[in-house]
Image 1: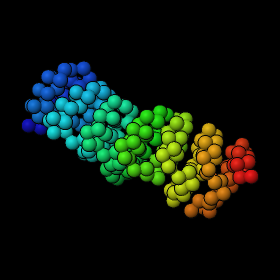
Image 2: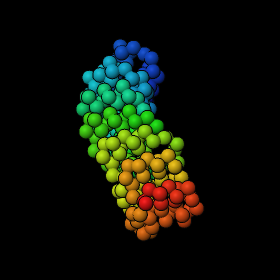
Image 3: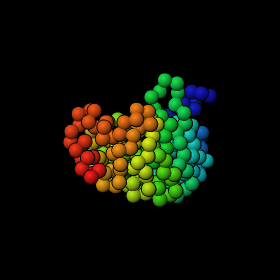
Image 4: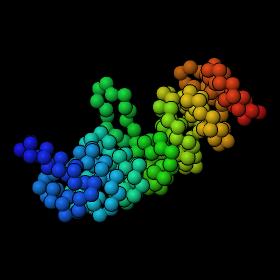
Length: 228
């Protein structure tokens, strides 16, 4: 029984990229089920009729069985993301807890969308009622030094993200920008009212002091100019 299920699931995974609705429906009728890989491939196909077919077969668009909710996997696929949000997907659902030893953090779809260079997914989620969680702005700035431009950061600020939020983990957005050495995002935050004198909770050091400590003269000068 387990081997047959494995074969059905594998067949579904192979069928997804280009097979007809009839072939996919047949596999689902026989008991094939989605896993994270096949779900991602369905989303990448960006074909509403196929997504509707899955829904007709009892697909839960808010399932987090694979650690990632479907809307998390869909942030790179505008058509699929829009369809999911129109068909009951929760725009604010968090990913499940990671296994022990994993470096991945619990996060929302908005967090994942904020890491991208294009703000389409951010705007889609927020327009469908996604909660503007405080961590999203740090994802837009970059948790892993990604070069993603300023579009998602701009979109979050436009929707009310607090540019002076003080996170116990990430400090203020300005601290985080200094840590990542990103001048373009520093410029945007200062233009939108970020205060370089606010001190971090743990070290009691301001973003301006932090920039000087790290030897980032250009960033320090920009913050000093904005404070005058």
